[in-house]
Image 1: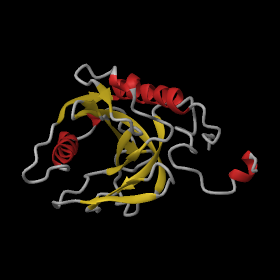
Image 2: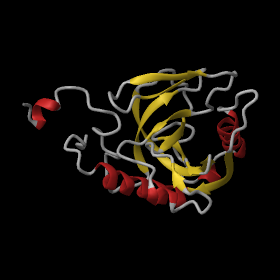
Image 3: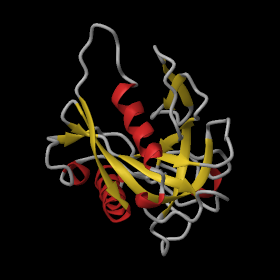
Length: 212
């Protein structure tokens, strides 16, 4: 048998073992686990069982994410997230995705960073809500002062929309992805809060979901 103190000697699960934020009073600053960098042509994602980063699939095209891409710990896209999207019947059942802009090129994944939420893209994939939160690296020399999505150049958001609209494309197969609706900081924070509530309802029984 082990106790909680012994468990903390080992690396925590990036989804369940880390807190959503370091300072609860700063709701807009969230902890982010990075799965993909802008230089990646292979799609990596967290293995939900082990917490290790795994290869999901090589990208068929040369599409690479135009920002750091990962998820917010202790979030889950369930009924509360779906309720914020009138055209979605459900949510995708994954941690809440987040894209983070950084002036300096960060070339490695499997890292943590703090990001300021500025907006989001309401992505609907096969009828399921699959929101992509947009954020900036906290303290970034270029993007660090952005408070809302309106503070970003429109081309940044357009590139994210294009990436998510096309990154699952396979010749001869139809995809049902919509990324038309872009929202600002206030709505993004509502989505984050809904994903936190979904997580508590889905995984609140886990004794290992300790704060960092």
